[in-house]
Image 1: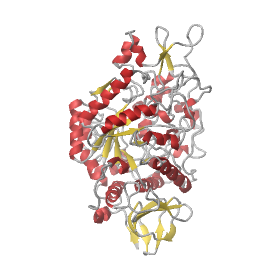
Image 2: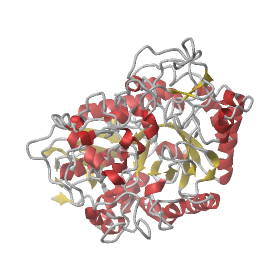
Image 3: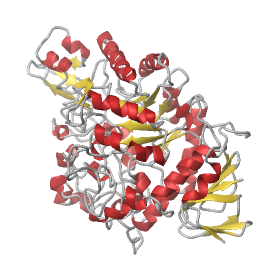
Image 4: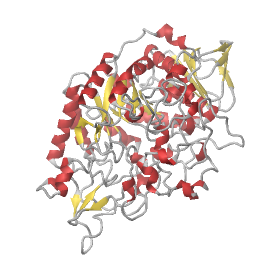
Length: 633
């Protein structure tokens, strides 16, 4: 008998089985909204806070617990809003402070919590503090990292540190001093040893907590403290070292005192407010330090995102991630896509195969202990848009004219002679080079990265660098493209995952707003819209809805350690055929078939949800290729 296990009604039998935990973040599903591309309320083609508020019912129906909003503060937008000029005001591009307040209230009315970005490592060059520093106001430069240059005339940078975007991490000002910017020159680094910096960010956090937000995603949470004396590193291509070895500008022990202070501030508010670290560290053990009981509540774990479609690699990543966080009593986080990496439908090979793997990976992720992050549009199975015309691209890194200095990683299966056909609504795979900035370049790129001589750091070996690969990055593809003239600046391809959401309708902008959209949407996306997929039991949207309903309802899912188990994580691996992963949690089992062909095995239980229809007689099961199935025990 074949079980059409993607049906909407599968979760109904469990729908009232659980209640929310006080420590809500431990098993929360958090939805990332890229504000510019979510929904446009005023017809300027750019998403805004009112647009987000109008679409909150979609998120409530989807079944997520919280919404994470990318920066909407006053900013020159040199780096997509991660160059903040006023931390307490909304940029007119996105609305005003009243819109932010109304959004938070509306979200809470629907049972959704709201997390906002905070950017503490650096400000915009247009921030009043930095403008005062350049104007020579007494004491103003002490808030930043200004230094005299080296050499007889001070014409050399103070040390050999490189910007994540390429070239020196230092820019010289008119009077001869240099200032540090680990990212773009428009993003000067703050000096966190200065008491005014500490006091200012305490005030900023309190401002938004008083408005009612439920927490903060902390940008570059590992970067605020630099090693004493700012010592040289002694080699180039420093971005390739991020997340692999100690560096004097990242993951210094002093950052933990900042996070402890912020934890005390968060705990002083009612309602379980949380801090989420965007942190890179040389090991899982170092990363776990950010989520010790007296520090932050979560830290992004990108190792799952970059893991190849390989069962042994997946199991290793899962085990090591859970082990590190369990050791400090914290939940693990899982993520497959975000606004800085190629969407995982395309990353897993594109076409029908990529969509099948993406659906399976989503069920695997949502079955694991801990908290999961969803990126807007992944619930629709959106692919990467790989054929945007150059004139429409707005990722500022696109026009840097710099080529990758490291080989393209291959994290998906080698290309076969006959690539899989595109899935409905997906453009055919495009033969263009695909790289992303080095790990810490999430949300931090700009044409200003061309400034200064010196070698550009390579695309990196950290998770975010490895995440950048679509079909064109498979073995044997891409090398020639890097030498082509049109490949200049192709490390600025983040626009492809930022194309605005399709909500409904037969043609662009598919309900995104009253007019067009800041990036063009593919003509085939009509079939992928929220309206088109709603009610279709085989759609990716209904698969996500059913999965999130079951995740809330089944006692064995949710928080780590739920239910009786000899494993403190509430999870146990069982023997399975080659290419298959099988694990149990209390009353629950999950099977993942990574093979390109079906495989038979004893049925672990009763199938309740699958990314593709499964055949079972109750004793054995035939798992489809590239599929994941949930079982009730």
